[in-house]
Length: 294
Image (cartoon, rainbow, N blue to C red; front, side, top):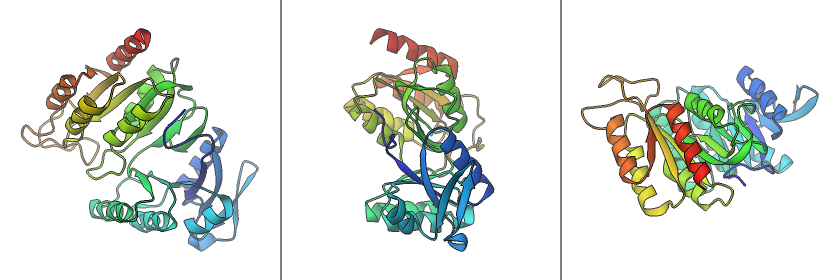
């Protein structure tokens, strides 16, 4: 089993004719994902050849859905056009939109998330994220499919790099689904959304949650785990050595005073029964202990 993305998912790529869109379309197809077309309003009606697979290019997501039955879109549109691309996806009512683009203005992100919520039909992952992979089933985004195979661990992470490392460290056990939710101040799918879905997924036995400094998302996730999650959760919080007041990598990873520190997040998670590693490798070891005990 998997969450949000399955073997039957049919994927559109917004920005398929651009260099990044085309490169990752090739990688998604090679991993076995069902990429069925893409969009570029200026090149609608043409096709893109990807290693022998001819994919149609549509003007809008709605046209692509009508022609191909797509239910997922992956957005590789430059920051200036990202809001319009998300609006296009939401207007079409596509169930899942994965926004890979980084550098999207926060006011644009806040606006398109509010727009999506008002419509109530489209789940957004991102922006500034590596996407989502259900190993052996489908891959929507830029996560390398060769890192890990299918298994029964669920992974939700703010960090793309740490998503890759954790998948590699636990590759012999494998993952039901791994989601990189992004580290911007405003994101769509949250830790809590993923935790709830993994809790409800019969194919997921245990969960790894990776957070980082800044904001209070991890504290809120800890409260949710305490009340609603019965499956074992192992955690890691990046940024113990980050200097106060300095943004570290992600726009949302900034500590002000005592708010948003790695130590505070670690303590909140441990109070909720989450075993928290001091390093990614220790976190993987803790998960191995959890799996061995199941």
